[in-house]
Amino acid sequence: MAAVVVAVVLLREVLLPFVAGMLLAYLLDPLATRLERLGMNRLVATLTIVGLFVVGVTTLIILTAPVVVGELAYFIDNFPLYIKTVRGFATDPDRPWLSKLVGEGLAYAEQSVGELTAMATAGFKDFLRSVWTGGRALISAFSLLVVTPIVACYLIYDWKKMVAVIDNWIPPAQRDTVRALAREIDDTIGGFLIGQGTLCLILAVFYAAALSVLGLKHGILIGIAAGLISFVPYLGSLSGLVTSTCVAIAQFWPHWAIIWIVPAIFFVGQTLSDYLLSPYFVGRRVNLNPVWIMFALFAFGYLFGFVGLLIAVPLASAIGVLTRFALQRYYESFFYTATPRATTTDAVRLTHCDKKMD
Image (cartoon, rainbow, N blue to C red; front, side):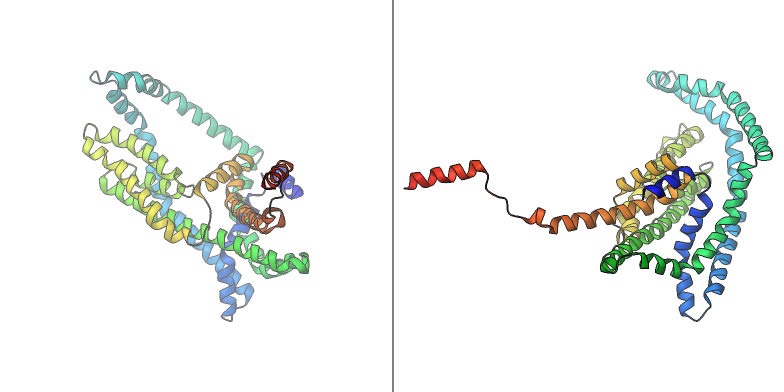
């Protein structure tokens, strides 16, 4: 375990395509196994599944990229106008408390738009220079797009062999226990990834559709981003709520009736997620507390960057299963179930009572 942790820390900058390939192989291996049971060769099934996945992701990017890029360009072009509108609202003489609260900050933001643009331009130039000189970013993008599918193909094809080798490492007397724990960890991780992924897609469609019907500018972009970020519980809804409310104030003020609809949309979405969608898609198979998931994502993301975000939920699930197993063994142990012995004070009291009775 110590060697694995040291290796992850030292090699975290080059592990992204391999961790992504392992995650992709883990998700697609059940489908390959099912096709193999239907009579298809394992290699053919692996190439077919990975090929269809790559084509599907590429098609999705091609279809959504123009919309996302257009929304981003539109938002950047209108950002100074939003700042002026919200600043005018904050500096209204009828609301002196609001002016003191946010007026100065908005004035500073308006003045620094040009500085931020200049900084962004300089940073983009530095990024291009680093790409051509060091080639680090280019290599990272290339490895993520090319190496990840290759790693996934090899892992899917050899998945059964790898599982058999790892199973052979375990002492025969402990194999049943380890296999049971591995099955529980697998159910927990698979249930969370599939369930939470489905939940994120549903929320993204709901937020984007509701904000677009309301007529909010950048509604599609904000809704999709809020839904996808909902992979971290409550983070997506909170970030989408703050961003969309600010845009709504800049766009619809002083029509408060329309502005209040925006928070209502996110309240309805989070309520449906907590009480209807999450219990159905996630809660039936996953025994992970949302607070534990958020802590794991933030902690591993801080330690290992984007690689940490990929391995946070699987590691948190494994730790949770092992912790529950350890507690179960502890409750069944003699150390926990043994009857307490009488202390010296209790023995003296019993002797004193016996003398009184005599």
